[in-house]
Length: 219
Image 1 (tube, rainbow, N blue to C red):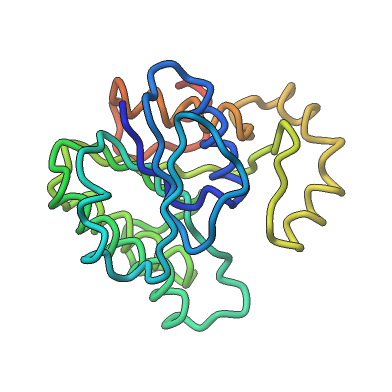
Image 2 (cartoon, helix red, strand yellow):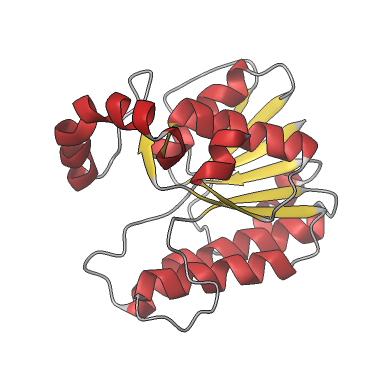
């Protein structure tokens, strides 16, 4: 399987990249982003692309892939709905529409979030926009598309979030995460489990198009 990865520098993306490089079923990984990765690996190709809203100049580089793991996202904190919509919906669909045209046999997996609003009508702004994004992705002509909705994710293997607030939260809650996972294993996942689940779903599929934390842990 050849994989395109968006968001490889984020906490989730770092975990997914690590598992892709370790997994024998993944032949190659193309990381697409605005900045170059410091990491090197025989499987890994780094494609620096400044405009993530347009891919006309690099379409040849995006062809011939079996799966896309879209881990790119931002917090809605401090953003207007228009700002969050542009980064969450417009940016994601720009990539997905291009990839569905170039790779119709591709499986597209999108990192969403627990509490996403599929009705697109709820009070929570971020949940509405995420729901709109999920719904649009599920309508595209991919071989398959899956929405991953994690709750709490425990970073492992030295992985850290780029967001200061999240790093502070993990610093406080970190010692409690193993206990929470022991008591309620379906309430929390790890960056390692998350990456492995993405790979397995891309290879084998899953009975649901939307995977909550319990589904991710089960996979």
